[in-house]
Length: 86
Image (tube, rainbow, N blue to C red; front, side):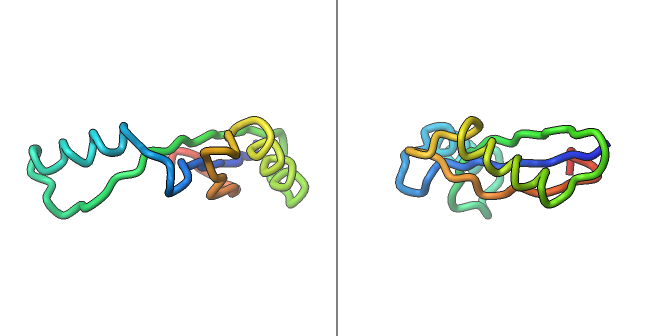
């Protein structure tokens, strides 16, 4: 069994209110070293067998057509992962 991990982020020019809220909260909790936060989303797709180049290509196509909104989001990563939690 293989896993494909897809990361989607808002485009840089799109306002990210959730990221701004987290960015405002971090210093109040003692985390002064961070200057910006952007919030995104991750999808983990499971396949029978190994993750081949064809599977990755299909996952990228699914990400661009279904898992992201191309008007406001970018698909930033499509990769194979042994442990999708990492």
